[in-house]
Length: 143
Image (cartoon, rainbow, N blue to C red; front, side, top):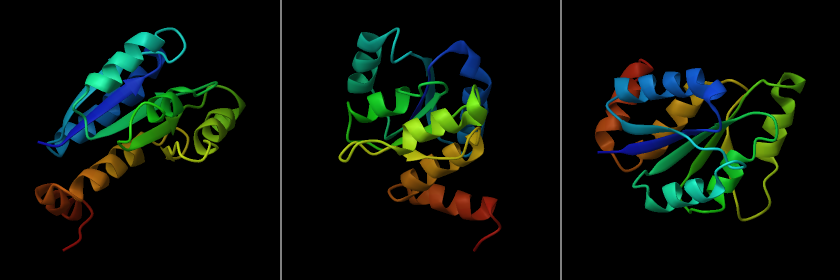
């Protein structure tokens, strides 16, 4: 069963996390939703990432938006960042995610674009899980 770990930096990100989880479950993807701050709970985040059996991580963050990059620094599994619109129309969070140093990539979707974060995670999983490929194609009206 494909699995995605959705990590939000604070309770204020819960609505976006819940929407992602809902779409993933709609497609039959197993997922976890955790609230773990990269700044307030770095040890907990480290332990979770190392122990997780997720194939893909989705990290939702605003302001400094360090969460996706910190996760990416702890794993070689794909990390997708979804920036929140908290300040500066989300531009600060977006730039924090896309301007990662070489060797620590974070795939980043648009500001507040929870749907693309979930779909990108499923497209990554579909490379290995062919049943998911079929569901994604049906969802887009493709053959």
